[in-house]
Image (cartoon, rainbow, N blue to C red; front, side, top):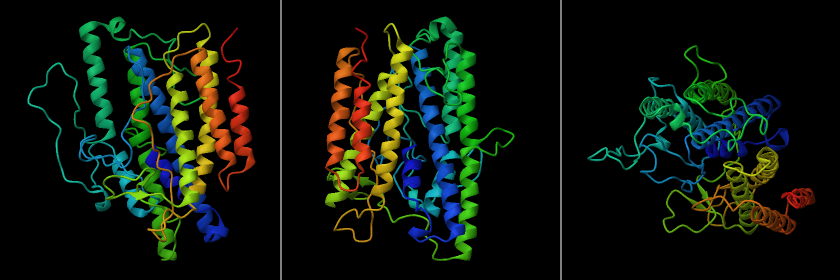
Length: 385
């Protein structure tokens, strides 16, 4: 999802940014398509979180920072941040391809092959390799069916629905409470179909959407060889100076660095709000979830606006001609805060800090700070008296 967002944020807007009328229309269409894919990926994230709660877990959104080092994913799954380009599109098509579909990843994303096997498949959970996203989810389905047969559905889906995020809280296609093997498999079906397409070749699948953008790009580039739909954003921008700078761009231009720091802080709080939405045990979990999810969605809009602005700023004096970009830098863990007064106060403090920070960042409108301050006030009466 972050890789898709990064590509969308890098796209130019309108004729004032060097596009013809026809090109501007196409690029606007591509942006909407990629953002729709990212929104569906957010829905998938929520479905998987509900499934995690259903089987007795607590969802988390922890992951390594970009670019993801070899070993975390199978060797065929390369996850980096790159601006919109033909190479990036080919990579997205490769990631979303259906099982059995021919094709190789673009050479720019090539990585030495490896496997993550172990000598004994025993009690300790371990990473397992998969070739496509569909392959991964089919493996999850197979294991759920096996477990349900071994321990029974009631014992497997012991987490209940009250601690999940349902359609009464958020309006994402397919996001519903999971309490049985049937509902779990329905969620998995939707994730696979939205990604790679159904056996009937769903036209609006992520795979088909990226193929259509590639066809458009080839046609427009054929008419105008100098067509540049995206800003020259950095590959793998980083917020902090890395010990190994290869394949990364350290964002140290003063204006871009301040904006990137702000945007990553917004992203971090956004993730925190999502984490707090699951596993709630209070007397009014749905009301609390709606407050948290609404705040997270508001922060998504703030993040998108700031990320668009980053793509138009220089990255570093050491990288002339390269623009900055949102790095999606995050903490090593996003563990849930204690609920009640503790989360109320800490979330409010972070929103107020973001509002104060926004006032000092050049280029951010006063509306951003005002919006964050207003959002902070929604948590003042958060806990019933």
